[in-house]
Length: 291
Image (cartoon, rainbow, N blue to C red):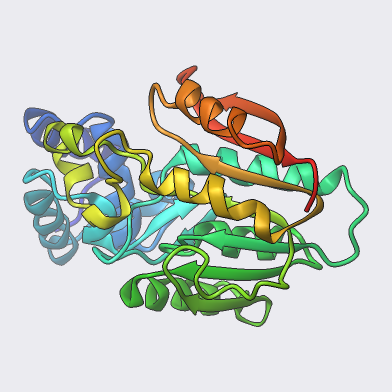
């Protein structure tokens, strides 16, 4: 038995109420996402045709997803998909779920390259994870050559799959590497990008259940959350081309600490910090006196 067009909003509201009782924000939007996934429709066509397609079999599929989501397990892992910069990426528990804040990093990187006349910009992605940064840069910057690093074999597998699915494989070289270990001493990049682990160990236990489902190695970085950032600040200038930039994401209340790290390093001559949509310092942009 199918749902009538008039009853579809009611059905969505009923499912959203179940999620809301579990403490899930944006519950209605999540239900729409589930329906689009199950019915293989975009949001517009969901409201045009979704009611006629929502048969008993599809309802059972929706119920199965909702019943798992109420445990606060991330919807992205349940559906094995996450949207980033207008593209659908495959995700698994081997990688962090991409966040909108990281889109700001890509926007800053794209803007920087748009202001430079670089024939074939070299980009280094430190900690590739699901591949959202590397794939986005490879597709948005037509002449880019990207090297993507990650210590996790599982993450590299996911990133390679996304590069293949989205047509970026030939533009990205993947290397298994702990930070810069697999980068040759003579390699130079116009952009060094990273969304590094930046959660302080004491703060980890208090995170939301959805965040705790992410791989811990991709989130925590010592007592202040600065271990990975410190490694990038110390090592990245060694691989930066003249006039290049180092751009990475930081956590809440880390901007001053990162600024102090760069102030003690004579190689750095400028630091800019961008705020996210919640007015939180989020993206650090560094330039060096020499490559």
